[in-house]
Amino acid sequence: MNIIDGKKIADEIKSEIAKEVKEMLDNNTKAPHLAAIIVGDDPASQTYVANKEKACHEVGFISSVYKYPSTITEKELLDTIDFINNDDDIDGLIVQQPLPKHISVDKVIEKINYTKDVDGFHPINFGKMASNLPAFIAATPLGILELLKRAGVETEGKHCVVLGRSHIVGSPMSILLARNTNPGNCTVSLCHSKTKNLKEISAQADILIVAMGKLEYVKADMVKEGAVVIDVGLHRVPSNETKSGFRLKGDVKYDEVSKKCSYITPVPGGVGPMTITALLMNTLKAAKKEI
Ligand code: NAP
Image (cartoon, rainbow, N blue to C red):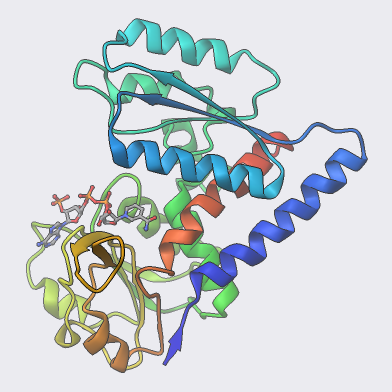
């Protein structure tokens, strides 16, 4: 069984990005600039944005954070996005979710200029991705593709089962792995809460991607011998064995499932570190005007 070390792969990619930024600066090109908008004081959102800022600094990117109280109106937020869309110094823009209920997430996403949409959520990017055209791909699926590629997992002709059809993970993942690309060329089954015989379908997977948000849902009897298992789930579980008072766990019951796998991503240290790194990859693409 091979453990796919997401932290190590993320560090490799970050040093490659840092090298490119250095070359850009040596050629008198400005460093890539990522802007983040955060609304309200949700502690998890504050942590995510702080981690994104830290990752930007690690690779030499410029990072700006626009913070607004949850009383900001939808119009004010859309105007801010417009302002950033028109600022040539800023290459990539993300709006941290969740947003307050009075603000339409769809309107916000559609307002972002798709050439700066490094989260890959804009319908133009989603459509281009599905059409196999150059596009910003959402960070988590992009990170998973990179993990599969760099871990040397063969995907062509394999049956890939994706558990979960969210717009940010499961759905794009299923499209990406069905495309005629490498990684890709899988036969894909996309499962969700209305799927019948989910266990049986899951147990047929050569590659199983789990993004359900259900703590340790996938047990050994749902996994085929020799399968590749990618666990996207992230749960904080109380623990008195750690200083922080919690431990991170996934959607997969790691101890029993890992014994059957050819490859598996651990939680923490698998998909998680790749998500922010994939955002950096997209921001570099935006700065190089590749999309
Ligand atoms: P989500 O939007 O809640 O979607 C969950 C999906 O799982 C839905 O499609 C849902 O089906 C399906 N589902 C839930 N319970 C099910 C069940 N019992 N049987 C079959 N299908 C079921 O979740 P998400 O945003 O994709 O995130 C999934 C997990 O990944 C969460 O734990 C999240 O924290 C984690 N995550 C981690 C990262 C990272 O960087 N590590 C990034 C993103 C997300 P329906 O559509 O029918 O409701």
